[in-house]
Length: 305
Image (tube, rainbow, N blue to C red):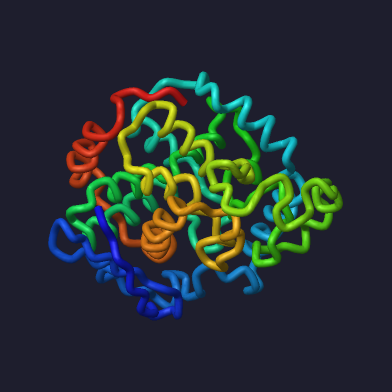
């Protein structure tokens, strides 16, 4: 599909994308979704400075995360989990496991994760009814958080959730609670602490090691189980927590042309992922047949995890 791009500003000052589909009617990637100024608790989204007990816990989470996410740790985790030898189960079985999970790194959400998945998917479905791959991507993008479950080794929260970032090169100062990287062993390693580190300009994000967590794990599950989601869907799954890139435009020197194209979809997806969080409940049984039809279309009945 050939796409040309115009970039008008969104309400929050970020850039929107309006690709024109030359094969169909115009597809507007800014949708009709209005970005709220605050969540249902009355504070701004992703506000890491507000004083609260929850925020203190979030900051401590990032302290431990930033100290321990090293090149050696990421290599160890990928070697352990890319075998996909823990469990065999369906997408819905995985969704049900997430009912037991609360993300300690999220300053906005303390509801079970299944609520967030369906809120995100339904908001996207309303604005992009013909992009069914994007609906399914929204439903499954956080399923890697099952790494917190005992069946998967019950990894600590700092090794599963939170913002992600490259390892093997300098940590960018735009990353939330950057100050704690000073205690990371890689921070003073001359092999890893330069702009490019072990990478090269335009090498492509596929060749970059990201901090270990649910994003990279779910990407491995989707890819190795041969789901038929388009590359943009896999890109969203793998990098949706990479806020230093899609919010602050850091690390763009490592991207290739395919990354640049896929980033347009990720930036669209991100506002739904972030701003659809609310106390409004989704009727799971009502929407389940639709999402099951998408699972049947793109995903095997049982996946290796």
